[in-house]
Length: 178
Image 1: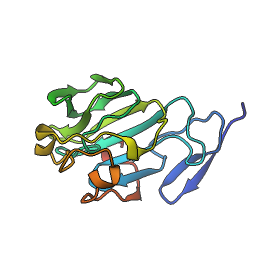
Image 2 (image 1 turned 90 degrees about the vertical axis):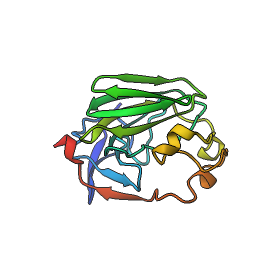
Image 3 (image 1 turned 45 degrees about the horizontal axis):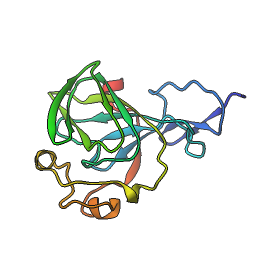
Protein backbone atom coordinates (compact mmCIF):
# COMPACT_ATOMS: atom_id res chain seq x y z
CA UNK A 1 0.00 0.00 0.00
CA UNK A 2 1.38 3.39 -0.96
CA UNK A 3 1.54 6.42 1.31
CA UNK A 4 -1.43 8.78 1.00
CA UNK A 5 -0.59 12.42 0.38
CA UNK A 6 -1.92 15.12 2.66
CA UNK A 7 -3.59 18.19 1.22
CA UNK A 8 -3.77 21.64 2.77
CA UNK A 9 -7.29 23.09 3.08
CA UNK A 10 -8.48 26.31 4.70
CA UNK A 11 -9.30 24.27 7.83
CA UNK A 12 -6.01 22.31 7.93
CA UNK A 13 -4.45 19.15 6.52
CA UNK A 14 -6.51 16.20 5.29
CA UNK A 15 -5.32 12.85 3.96
CA UNK A 16 -5.93 12.49 0.23
CA UNK A 17 -7.10 9.08 -0.91
CA UNK A 18 -6.27 5.60 0.29
CA UNK A 19 -2.97 4.52 1.80
CA UNK A 20 -1.06 4.88 5.02
CA UNK A 21 -0.35 8.31 6.47
CA UNK A 22 0.79 10.21 9.53
CA UNK A 23 -1.29 13.24 10.46
CA UNK A 24 -0.61 15.56 13.40
CA UNK A 25 -4.02 16.62 14.71
CA UNK A 26 -2.77 20.12 15.56
CA UNK A 27 -2.35 20.64 11.80
CA UNK A 28 -5.40 18.60 10.75
CA UNK A 29 -8.75 19.91 9.50
CA UNK A 30 -11.40 20.21 12.20
CA UNK A 31 -15.07 21.05 11.83
CA UNK A 32 -17.57 22.62 14.20
CA UNK A 33 -20.66 20.41 14.37
CA UNK A 34 -23.18 23.13 15.20
CA UNK A 35 -24.14 22.76 18.85
CA UNK A 36 -22.44 19.34 19.07
CA UNK A 37 -18.78 20.28 19.56
CA UNK A 38 -15.74 20.24 17.31
CA UNK A 39 -14.59 17.13 15.44
CA UNK A 40 -11.62 15.86 13.46
CA UNK A 41 -12.52 12.77 11.42
CA UNK A 42 -8.89 11.78 10.65
CA UNK A 43 -10.00 9.79 7.57
CA UNK A 44 -9.81 11.15 4.04
CA UNK A 45 -13.20 12.64 3.03
CA UNK A 46 -13.23 10.57 -0.16
CA UNK A 47 -11.68 7.40 1.32
CA UNK A 48 -13.33 6.44 4.60
CA UNK A 49 -11.71 3.54 6.42
CA UNK A 50 -13.56 0.33 5.48
CA UNK A 51 -13.11 -1.48 8.81
CA UNK A 52 -13.84 1.29 11.30
CA UNK A 53 -14.53 4.98 11.68
CA UNK A 54 -12.35 7.17 13.89
CA UNK A 55 -12.70 10.74 15.07
CA UNK A 56 -11.46 13.08 17.77
CA UNK A 57 -14.23 15.13 19.39
CA UNK A 58 -13.91 18.14 21.72
CA UNK A 59 -16.89 19.11 23.88
CA UNK A 60 -17.33 22.15 26.10
CA UNK A 61 -18.95 21.58 29.51
CA UNK A 62 -22.66 20.86 29.01
CA UNK A 63 -22.26 20.25 25.28
CA UNK A 64 -23.47 16.88 23.87
CA UNK A 65 -21.69 15.11 21.00
CA UNK A 66 -25.03 14.12 19.38
CA UNK A 67 -28.58 13.28 20.35
CA UNK A 68 -29.26 10.21 22.49
CA UNK A 69 -29.32 7.35 20.00
CA UNK A 70 -28.77 3.65 19.37
CA UNK A 71 -27.24 2.29 16.19
CA UNK A 72 -26.60 -1.15 14.76
CA UNK A 73 -22.82 -0.94 15.20
CA UNK A 74 -20.54 -0.95 18.22
CA UNK A 75 -18.64 2.16 19.27
CA UNK A 76 -15.82 2.94 21.69
CA UNK A 77 -15.05 6.21 23.46
CA UNK A 78 -11.74 6.99 25.20
CA UNK A 79 -11.55 10.21 27.25
CA UNK A 80 -8.11 11.70 26.60
CA UNK A 81 -8.53 14.94 28.58
CA UNK A 82 -11.14 16.57 30.78
CA UNK A 83 -14.39 15.17 32.07
CA UNK A 84 -17.70 14.17 30.54
CA UNK A 85 -20.77 12.19 31.37
CA UNK A 86 -22.14 9.30 29.39
CA UNK A 87 -25.83 8.60 29.36
CA UNK A 88 -26.17 4.91 28.53
CA UNK A 89 -29.46 3.00 28.58
CA UNK A 90 -30.99 5.85 30.55
CA UNK A 91 -28.27 5.88 33.25
CA UNK A 92 -25.75 8.66 33.86
CA UNK A 93 -22.06 7.69 34.20
CA UNK A 94 -19.21 10.12 34.95
CA UNK A 95 -16.13 9.67 32.74
CA UNK A 96 -12.67 11.13 33.37
CA UNK A 97 -9.32 11.07 31.61
CA UNK A 98 -8.41 7.51 30.49
CA UNK A 99 -11.91 6.14 31.07
CA UNK A 100 -13.13 4.00 28.18
CA UNK A 101 -16.80 3.44 27.31
CA UNK A 102 -17.75 0.47 25.13
CA UNK A 103 -21.16 0.73 23.48
CA UNK A 104 -22.34 -2.55 21.91
CA UNK A 105 -24.73 -2.48 18.94
CA UNK A 106 -28.24 -1.18 19.71
CA UNK A 107 -27.20 0.46 23.01
CA UNK A 108 -28.78 3.91 23.50
CA UNK A 109 -26.11 6.46 24.45
CA UNK A 110 -24.79 10.03 24.23
CA UNK A 111 -21.79 11.85 25.73
CA UNK A 112 -21.99 15.32 27.29
CA UNK A 113 -19.04 17.51 28.28
CA UNK A 114 -18.69 18.12 32.04
CA UNK A 115 -16.32 19.74 34.53
CA UNK A 116 -14.64 23.13 34.11
CA UNK A 117 -12.70 22.62 30.86
CA UNK A 118 -13.41 21.10 27.44
CA UNK A 119 -13.00 17.34 27.16
CA UNK A 120 -11.24 15.47 24.36
CA UNK A 121 -12.65 12.09 23.31
CA UNK A 122 -11.27 9.56 20.83
CA UNK A 123 -14.26 7.89 19.16
CA UNK A 124 -14.04 4.64 17.21
CA UNK A 125 -16.85 2.69 15.57
CA UNK A 126 -17.65 0.01 13.06
CA UNK A 127 -18.90 1.23 9.68
CA UNK A 128 -22.67 1.50 9.36
CA UNK A 129 -24.42 -0.93 7.09
CA UNK A 130 -27.52 1.25 6.98
CA UNK A 131 -28.15 4.97 6.67
CA UNK A 132 -28.37 7.45 9.52
CA UNK A 133 -32.10 7.58 8.83
CA UNK A 134 -32.42 4.05 10.22
CA UNK A 135 -30.98 4.84 13.65
CA UNK A 136 -33.09 4.80 16.79
CA UNK A 137 -33.48 8.12 18.66
CA UNK A 138 -35.39 7.23 21.84
CA UNK A 139 -36.75 10.11 23.90
CA UNK A 140 -34.87 10.15 27.22
CA UNK A 141 -35.52 12.33 30.27
CA UNK A 142 -31.91 12.35 31.51
CA UNK A 143 -30.49 13.18 28.08
CA UNK A 144 -33.14 15.90 27.71
CA UNK A 145 -31.76 17.67 30.81
CA UNK A 146 -28.60 18.25 28.77
CA UNK A 147 -30.36 19.13 25.50
CA UNK A 148 -29.34 15.74 24.11
CA UNK A 149 -32.67 14.00 23.46
CA UNK A 150 -35.01 14.01 20.50
CA UNK A 151 -38.30 15.69 21.43
CA UNK A 152 -40.06 12.38 20.73
CA UNK A 153 -38.82 8.88 19.88
CA UNK A 154 -38.13 8.37 16.21
CA UNK A 155 -36.07 6.35 13.74
CA UNK A 156 -35.53 9.38 11.50
CA UNK A 157 -32.40 11.51 11.97
CA UNK A 158 -34.08 14.31 10.00
CA UNK A 159 -36.94 14.36 12.47
CA UNK A 160 -34.69 13.98 15.55
CA UNK A 161 -32.42 16.87 14.50
CA UNK A 162 -35.12 19.04 12.86
CA UNK A 163 -34.81 21.85 15.41
CA UNK A 164 -31.03 21.55 15.94
CA UNK A 165 -28.03 23.38 14.53
CA UNK A 166 -25.80 20.71 12.96
CA UNK A 167 -24.23 22.48 9.99
CA UNK A 168 -20.52 21.71 9.77
CA UNK A 169 -18.03 24.51 9.34
CA UNK A 170 -14.20 24.44 9.19
CA UNK A 171 -12.38 25.35 12.37
CA UNK A 172 -8.74 25.42 13.50
CA UNK A 173 -7.61 22.83 16.07
CA UNK A 174 -9.55 23.31 19.33
CA UNK A 175 -8.07 24.75 22.55
CA UNK A 176 -7.42 21.52 24.53
CA UNK A 177 -5.12 20.22 21.79
CA UNK A 178 -2.82 23.22 21.81
